[in-house]
Image (tube, rainbow, N blue to C red; front, side, top):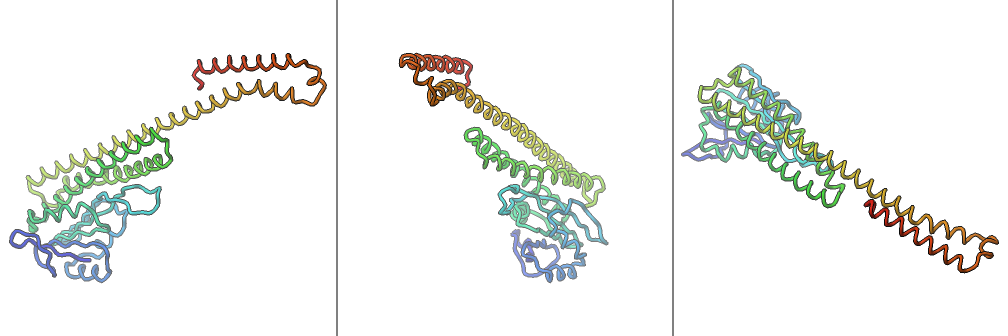
Length: 312
């Protein structure tokens, strides 16, 4: 589906056709006919439009004639029905700059473009470079928000795991870790992209816009550092949980061993006296009582010893 937006009387209005100074936004569902129509209308290589459909497309930029093509990664929720998949993944946003329009292509619905649309009335579509920088800004903000949400989820699942040792909580922590892997990979690639754009001045930025670009690089580096920090914390927590589970298993085994030792002597006496031999007949009744009493005393002594050793 193709959307056309333009500022009319200081308001963002969705219009029906392509005009100069418009923002063209492509969102699912996609049709091949729309790609061909837009490619012909704006003289855009159709591969630039199709590249957004590849979820593994890496951040990069290209120049074809007077058309500039930029790919940047942004986070989004994972709608997979597989319970072991990551909670969040990263998807590409393709930005295409023509002589008079800015075109964005999104393979999924994502918050960065929505935020950009909400603030579009404060933008100047003619200043296409600044429009691109503002999209980058929304992408960085999106990463920050998702990282905070990931950290909150991590704290929640860790607290629950301390209380219950649930396999479900362990699985959720694994899904959090997968999400952070996606974030770190995308943020590192985005950071390199922004640094190359700043170094080559691919967008033809003014001095003020270059300062804004440097701020975006710093914010992206900060988001990357946050993601690395959360990953390290999660890894340390998993090691701690493994040790706790191992210690818990050792404690259970010690208790079972102590119970086995305590019960072993009475069971042995019971086995001896239950044997169908002459020994069970020749022993006087008071001898059996003494044997039982001694067995109980020894069991109590052993139990007291294990209690002092904190095996129970």
